[in-house]
Length: 460
Image (tube, rainbow, N blue to C red; front, side, top):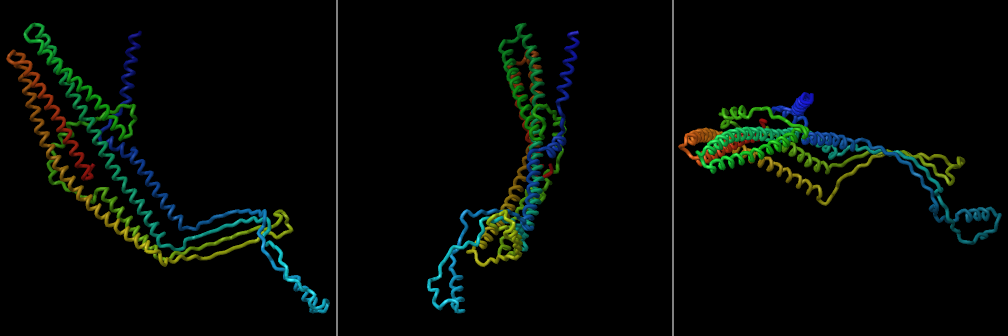
């Protein structure tokens, strides 16, 4: 019963482990990264910000309406000195009618303090302003739409970068796994040779040194296997990062590296491949950047034009010494509408300097675009050469590997027949391992050269 339970538990654990693995072809990994990547998510945020910027700029030219309420209580109300003009007038009338003798009022007019401001003032107002015409505003609206297109064009460039990262990390996993299989086969062969050598040593036909050499070789291979297994884990983690696969879950790369290499070997039209710089997303981005800079030049020129604004204001105020005394004056309305024009006359040459700087920046963008084209063409020529050389190197590495395998087999046969030494076998094994390493490096260089070429031509 106990054994039965352990068997069920083991099967369950194996199925659980298998179910936690996700298999990806290269195309599936690319599709997942294109729809689920941090860089693309950040780009979508930038695109949303550009959309909001358009709305913000448009809103600045629409009517702006603000309301407000204010209350002032004058602890000490402002007063004005007023000359007494009433008393002299009254005496003058009385003297003129004979009621008082002439010259009765002889004193100078007195002054007294008089306040025109009540102690309490409560006011409510609504103000509106509208930009009727401003040349730079119209350019800003046009530029904001162009900026949105500029941001949107950056998505293609980001996707290209993401694809390049996914392809290289995927290939690294495939290459490391092939290397692991090669090491495991070498270890299995060497373990068999070591078992046979120990038996021969026990019968006294070889020296102990021969066995020690094989044990050392086996130890070195086992150490290399541990390094490769760690490399596989690191490469998978990097791939999981690029495609946003959960780090705690294992993944399986299901494409066949040998099939890919065979396809690359048969490519014969690389020398005829040409580069169209204008199809690159970076070229389009630079073009949008140039258009935006031209908009800036246009905006500065429009600042020489007058601008016109309309405004309106309505206010009601309650002005009383006792705010709650309804016998005093009630609400007093005030309304006003008008136009305001700003006419540039002289700014000390500021706009002229700004325009010259903007023109120079436009010239710089033209230079940057030409430099980009030149650099890309150089990279393209180098990538083609590297791919062609990588094909030749792989062909040479394959021939070298086959030759070393044949030499090892011959050496092992001679050793078993007693006409060869263990040193010759060890040297042949060492040469084979070097040839295998060179072959793996040749494959790595070939697939990476093709990836670089696809990245440059934009054919990912």
